[in-house]
Length: 113
Length: 112
Image (cartoon, rainbow over all chains, first blue to last red; front, side, top):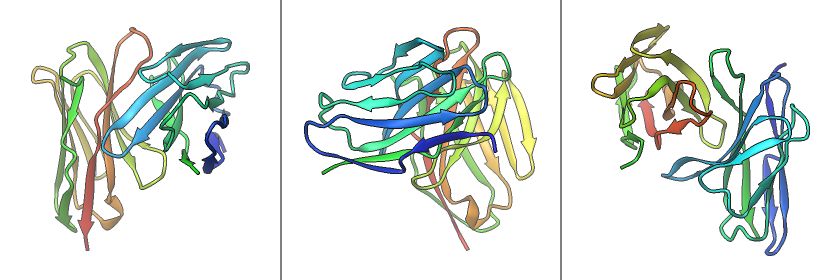
């Protein structure tokens, strides 16, 4: 089935540790996004990528890093510089020029030990 | 002022009721308007998608866009307990980057 796969579903981070959240899509979409969702705050954009090997910072990029080496994959690393990483992380993708619809993965819940 | 404003609720209605969910926005350049449904700890699911103004109907759901008032609505007819979720509105400009702007979501509970 076509879709966006995020893994793992739950992730725990120790203090000082970097962790990587996976996002893979088989929709052949060009643009991919990472959002952070906190209760009562809606979705906040971390990073987005419109094309392979290119990405832009969103509103809350500090403490996060991404790469876009393949069209299908857009992993997010939560670094030790992110002091408040506990949140629900959502990956999304969009096919530009074909209705501009944004589709989401199932999310990863990151918690601090 | 936020780009998109949405009443967080919570909203509680009896089964079979008509539900009205709303968002207001400030950016007159928004052209694409979306409604998402999100169950707890799941990814948002695209429910309705509208370009520019007007109405769109899909089963029990109707989306309305009033660009003159900068106001969008989602109506749910014959609401069901399975409609209990958080509803997010989203919008974006035409041909200006790829950023989407989201409301904070409205929590809906449909009571059997």
